[in-house]
Length: 112
Image 1: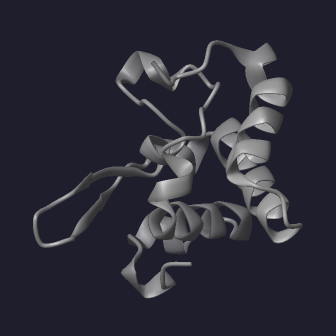
Image 2 (image 1 turned 180 degrees about the vertical axis):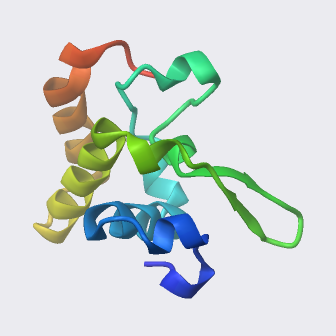
């Protein structure tokens, strides 16, 4: 998990589930770039659940956070499910399969 003091003020003031989702995404791009989102954010250029939280990392490793997930319960729910499944010993692929099965009813995957 990324330290909360590295998060923008609006993330630091968000509910705990949102804060932990931001911390987890920022610290786990290798997992979260392969997890889709189903909230419709593909229309704004997001290509994974990771993009709902992180919009850019510059050459020095400085993260620019996306504020999209601050107001989207689907994004946060997907991340919380992935976190829970990994804690329970499931693989990232198991988590993706679960996300596909659970959230595809809300719209298309944002992974091209």
